[in-house]
Image 1 (tube, helix red, strand yellow):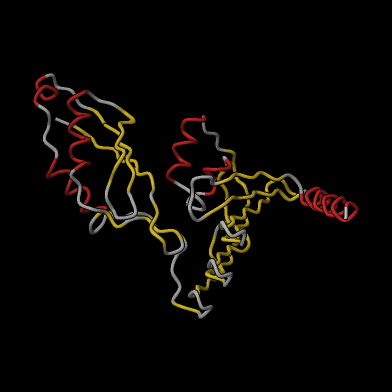
Image 2: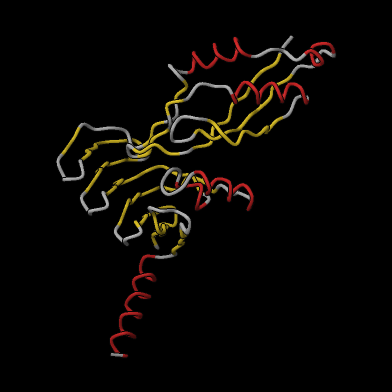
Length: 240
């Protein structure tokens, strides 16, 4: 028995050595996903495979990337991203890189059936198929879709122009500038966790927050057909 155990461990370590470096993160507070593994090809450190697993241990998704550049986060920023952009929402957030998809993008239902089989070449989608939980092919839909305000970006500009009231003190003191606001768009389209990233003045900042707080619901971002929470950054220009 001990010999079999030692042999299994040796084979496992040998397999890791053949593939190259591995990084693993665990989704301790996530009800659906367990962990994610990033693997580097030994002959090409810029070629990366990222695999996410369900709590059951079955594969949820697998991506093949060409890594373009490293992207670093400090601990606070990384934690904030991980709290919102979980699982495969933005894979680069977890492992600190951005890259182009190159090869297959595979996702699966929890019963093990394929949900999506996409083929990418240097960041460009070549072919794609989607399937229902029973394995039957259905109409194709994009893997990731961004959040949409009401009827689109034009409506967002119209909403801001209509709702913003230039604060009296800033008007009186001829204060102008661009306030940058970050908030979360939730799975039901509501907004929360509003923060000022770039301040202009206290009253302009407060007006920016007020306008964002009373926004109508957005169409949420979706990942593989499922609504997800996501950060959204909005610049608002104040000019006299």
